[in-house]
Length: 321
Image 1: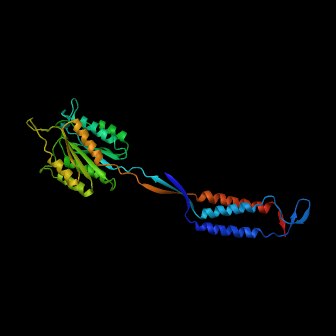
Image 2: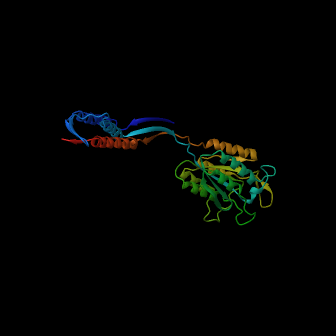
Image 3: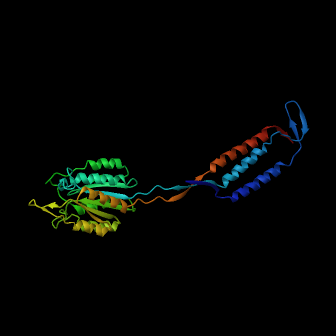
């Protein structure tokens, strides 16, 4: 930070100098007077050991400086400007599989990786959206990453084979975009993580949002959606395992200008978040000039000195023509 001092209307100083000169010229013309004391009356010329007009001059100088509008100029750096991020996490029962890390479920690994990502985004507002059949806003966009972390760690999967145990990728994406849409027109990013395929927006579901529709809506809002497919595959109805079809996740990313990632283990997921951290940098702060007004610092002392000078010069002695 650097600072400086300036007058915004320096020409007023010249006008002030002219007023001071005229005031001094008027005060220099002595006039005979009769000094009246408590006991005697004598004719004399006015003499003082201290001339109160000096106070008046200083007061006029202060007033002239105030009218010239003195300001202090400070160049300050704006803090880095964060972006708006929505972390969208699948909490369907398939996230209980333990194929990413020994002894940990897919959801636990995802939460740990997301927590480290959040810790690196100190200037960003981050929201947490969880979804299975329907999305839920677990935490609105916030810079209180401590509270966000606690909400993240308390996230749990839905009941297996319950009414919510499905995967609505399109609805979750559209919901997250709506959350970020309310945050203005700055940089906004969705990071969607899932281990499944869309099975809510079917031909029988009239009001469901397909992944394609969600991608088109996100692109129209200028929101990038990065998608992450985790796990080794999905389980079919007969219990067999099959590779995950990531076509819809890839399409969402392509439509919005985002990237698609696959993570088959915990280390790969950490690498995904590291890449996302580099892809979505915080905008650097820019310097700006701040003006600090010094008007009153000159006006008040100037008025005080001028008034005191006038009072002293008129009360130090009585003057009789």
